[in-house]
Amino acid sequence: MTGILYGVGVGPGDPELMTLKAHRVISGAKVIAYPAPDSGESFARSIAAEAIASDAIEIPMIVPMRVERFPAQDVYAASAEVIAKHLSAGENVVVLCEGDPFFYGSFMYLFARLADIFPTEIIPGVSSLGACSAALRRPLTARNDVLTVIPGPLPDEDMRAKIESAEAIAIMKVGRHLPRIRALLDEMGMTENAGYIERASLGEQTVLPLADAPESAPYFSMILIYKGDDPWLTL
Amino acid sequence: MTGILYGVGVGPGDPELMTLKAHRVISGAKVIAYPAPDSGESFARSIAAEAIASDAIEIPMIVPMRVERFPAQDVYAASAEVIAKHLSAGENVVVLCEGDPFFYGSFMYLFARLADIFPTEIIPGVSSLGACSAALRRPLTARNDVLTVIPGPLPDEDMRAKIESAEAIAIMKVGRHLPRIRALLDEMGMTENAGYIERASLGEQTVLPLADAPESAPYFSMILIYKGDDPWLTL
Image (tube, rainbow over all chains, first blue to last red; front, side, top):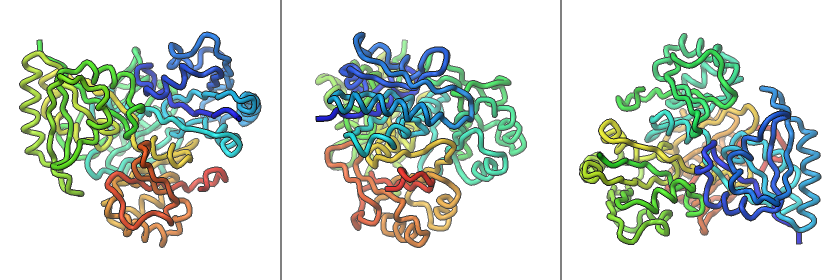
């Protein structure tokens, strides 16, 4: 009997936004893996910390946190090997994922290597989309809106076309692209419908009209734009 | 002191996909409101049922479940009045929302009427996007994909343009539009990359390649399309 591989979404940051299922599976885990930066704390682990057993075996997957860099496949290949050993020995392995495992998540690199070999279960989590719209206090989408989710690195021309053709827009992973994106939205006359959110659901959460956003943004920041005509959707 | 209005996402269907926070707030609630059909059970209430105190006051907001029909604003106006009375009397009111309150949620109609008057907190939930991609066992989005979420009722011409310009596509609220959408995707050569999901995360969940989907679909069904080129992302 091999163990089960769990890809567990731990939500956007507030530990109370973990699901009951995530909490149960993490609490019972004897082997836990998570992405971690080369220096400092793992964000995914910090969200789940209270639930992790003190004698759990921990496997940090250390991926250098260079913005824009393609995740180091070597790290995931090596981690998959370590995880496979535990699974082969009959131990379940819980992989902690920020937000939702399959929404821009690096868990896919483990899933690609292991899900054909070992029983694998995905536990969805609250994504940053939900946390950011809650923080902004404005619906993300209503009725028959089209929502487009755009990664911050997308070039201006493409980004402009996507923004023009949707009612609701979320720009993710804003980070160092903030000045460029802000200039584009200004030019498009969209600034007054745009909200800026940093570290949604955490104690140090920041929510601002885009016009008041800081010059530099962390990787975990988002811009939400709503082009619908409901008066209560205006910031 | 007035009470607090809570818009609480209860997730996609599996009660264990409620967040710890949702569970805590629902368990402690003395007044609970939720959308309900004119006959049969409220889906949102059924998800949270185990957490609801037996002596809680319940306010079903009965909205006729006609597909496509604009939600009856009269119902929300009347419900908002009832809820306002409890809030004015100092009682918190918890409104149960399927999935996430601000992701195509009818909670916005209460929020619009009450959030300027009473302290209001939104508790985000796991959306059907996360539940459906987990059920399909395929990432919803990877790396720098653009994701577009399209409501099923969107006309063919618009839908075609949206599908052409994104890497990842989720078509929500498929329901009676399934035959039309399937014909469009066939014509676009997209059928083999499309998955069909019904009642994600529930016991009676159905997951099929789109080609094998049934003729008629329930309202809570979704089609996920992935146009990326990673081999493990092909169904």
